[in-house]
Length: 285
Image 1 (cartoon, rainbow, N blue to C red):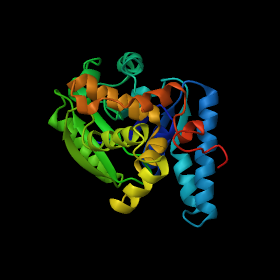
Image 2: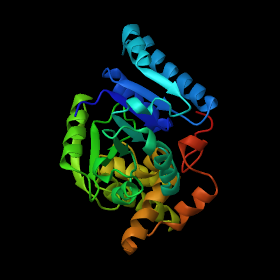
Image 3: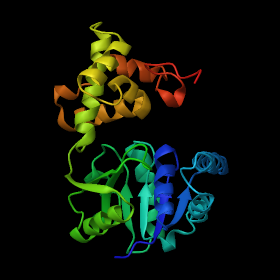
Image 4: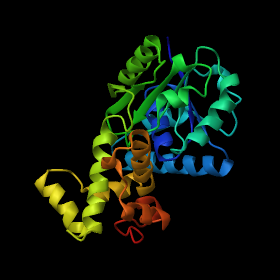
């Protein structure tokens, strides 16, 4: 099928970047948020980001104008009747996602594919809350979506080959490299990455090494571009905890037990960069 109109629900960090990726490749994008205030913040953020790229010579003014021209901003679903693809990019909360599917299903044409940007929740479970599980797929972008080449394409139990092939082709159209993933908790990257961050939390909790020394060790000893604790702060410690809990609840495997320090920090709202403080203090930056 031909995909031209992309509707993105949720324009936080990931959703906004996804919107920019599609708009930069000439797709008609409709970006949805629940309130005008959220839309105003998103517009200001993307304008600021693109303006900086223009100022640094990384992008021309014409390229910036092209991207912005291709994005419509909405607070209701009145344009869903033209959607070829809906990408849901809201919080990692099944109940929130289910509510959205209930709201949009009747408004989408039969042809519309629904994709979720979930980083760990069962695609089969989410698809079961729709009437089109054959046209439902996991489309997991990585942060920042404007830079990272990878997209994990996750089949639910009922995802059709036609749906998978259409989205795989679409990923290549927008300059991404898709990898096919059979459904499992955490998929590929997060099943490896998040337990590593969790183990780094245990090392700090147990007094084996300091926060800075853990990150330095992994950067210099494993040639990682950033340490696991700084990476956890970048991802969001609440997101890391949610993924660990999902993997544990799905498998009951003790290797996915979340570190108590990680849970304590999330309870204290020390979530990383987005709150100004996590393992590191970002308030002065």
